[in-house]
Image (cartoon, rainbow, N blue to C red; front, side):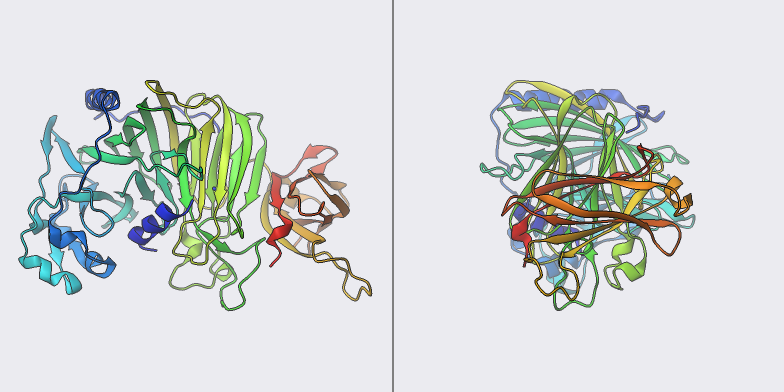
Length: 516
C-alpha cells in the first residue's frame, strides 16, 4: 500500500535482551543537545498550530497527482560521496505541513531550501511544472543504501507524515510503520498525533554503514528531541533516544508505537469472496517479559474496537511479527505479503511498570491500518515533566534469534461440534487448534510425554489433547471451549516436557460476539 494511503487510514483508525548504546564516530551530540533545548523551550510556550503555507495549487491535489511528482534520482544528496544517499518528498496531498531539513556536512550546518528542479512533474502532475511552487517545502525524505546488491542503492527507510517512519531489511517490502510517539490512542478524548517538524541529517564518512539523524517533535501536549542512529545490514537496526517535555498532562503515553494491518487469516473468519487465504501486514504480537516468558498473541479483525493489555515491569522486548513467509500462505502476486517486515522493540534502559497495549479496530479494507501496539508507562506524563526513553527498533523476518523455544506456527478455530453429532452444541462452543514447531520440540519422539498447560479466565475448557503431526516436527494442541455467556475468555496455552516449557505461551482472547 502507498504510504500516503496508509497514513490516511491510520489517522482515522486506531491496538529483550539488553543491548549496548553505541554512537558512530561521526556523532555530534551538540546538535542533539541544541534540539533538546529547543524542545524544552517549545514546551514552555503555548502550542502554535502550524497553518500550511503551501501554494494554493498544491493544497487540493489528489493521490494520482501527488504520486506523479517524482524525485529525480540523479539529484540525490551525497550520491557520489557516501554509501548512503538521500531523496526528498514533495509537500502536497495529505502532506500539507512541510518539514525543515538541515544537512551537517564537514561539521557545518546548512538548511536545505526547496528546489523544484529536484522533481519531475509527470502525467497527472504535468500542469504543476509551469506553476510557481516556491515555498512548497519538503514533506519528508528517504534513505538509500546498497542493501541487497553492491551496485544499487535500495530505498530502506522513509520519514514522512506526522512522526511516522517505515523501514525494510534485506529482501523485504514495506508493510507496517513505526512512529515517534502515540498519545491517547483509542481514548474517548481522541488521539493526538505528534509530528516531526525539523530534521538534521549527518553526512556519513564514505564507507560508513551507519547514519545519524536528529529530529524535533511537537504536538499540543508535549515537545521532544529525537536522536536516531541507523545501522545497516541484513536487518536494519535503529537506536533511538527520545527526550520529552510535557506542556500538559498526558494520560496515555504510547512509547515505540507500531502501526499495521490485519484483514483476515489464521484464527479469524475468512471472507466469502476472496481467493487469498490470508491478508495482513502482521500476524501476531510477540512479547518477551522481564521474567523471561515469551508470549504470542495472534491478531484479529474484530467486529468492534478491542483493546487488550499485557502487564509487565521492564520488558525485554516486544513487536509485531509477520511469521508466515511463504508465497503460498497469501497467493498475492501484487502485495507479496510474505515479504512484509517484522519489527522488534528492545528497551535500552529500564522502562519500569506498565502495559503493552494492543489496539485492534474493525476494518473492511486492507488499505486501512487497523492494528496499533505500544508501551504505556504506569505513571502518566504530567505537565512540566521531562522524561527520556531509549530503545532499539529492528527489522526481522519470522522469529527472534534469541528465542530458545518452539513458536506458534498457526492457530485455527471453529465450531466445537463433533461431525455427525445428532444433538450438536450451540455455535458458541468453539474448538481451538494451535500448532507449534522449532527448537527442542521438533526433535522429540511421539513417545516423549509432551503435555499442554491451559488456563482460561472464564467459561469451561474440555478435551485438551496433544499430538505430533505427520511431518515429525510440528506438535498440535487442541481443546474445546464453552464460553460463559457473552463474557470474553482470555486463554493461555503452552507445551511442556516434565513441567519444563518447550514453547512460547499462546495467548488469545475469544469474544463470543465475534461469531459472524
